[in-house]
Image 1: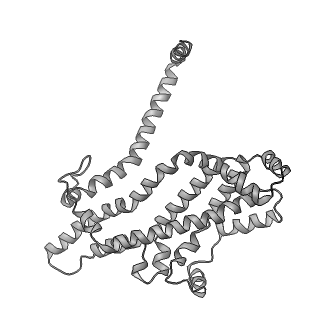
Image 2 (image 1 turned 30 degrees about the vertical axis):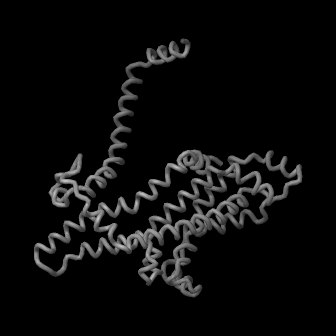
Length: 302
């Protein structure tokens, strides 16, 4: 009863200015949500609508003349499934290797007793602002014999300095020094402290880093475009890019054929977004409960 009375008193105390403020906030946030959600919704309804209706602008709030031809054209191709398999392999390897590299490095940088800590901080900060460029990058990969191999896709992606510093800040903010000291008093060494104490308390940042690296690798196509020559090794994003370019190539043929290619290209454009995004959207619910905690602690505190 007391809580209900308090709630009623709080509502009564709201003045006209407060009500106007909350109303404006609600309208503003609603518009922002609409701006974000509607393009995603439009991609879905456009992918299953008749291409002529989409081109004519008739598809606005709901699908028109529902057709699955775009999905059939995409999914009946063997190179799509091969691209899916390649991308899954590249992404899984990247996530595993990235966590192996990023988490221990972030823990080391978070320790005040790290020898040469200032040097290592500068060493990692410099690549955030300066890069050697594409030609030196290609020459390095070529000299290492990685051209046209999956390692040309995986190895350059296993460490993000931004993710490293986020991990470092998480450890500084979330692992009490007293807990570490107590473990050492009980006889635990550095390795034991890290594996038995720190890692079990770091599920949030582990989930966030896994998601960040997975999304980054899943959506990547530039390195594959530069370093891969064998189409059988292409990741999904590059396969979809090649399909879209081929479908938009309307040179030659009769006017009716060109129009047909243009209609199909327009539909494939929307279908490709869905085909490439669904696996990532399916992954997010499994890490969502850790996501907010890991991002907020790792990026804002410290």
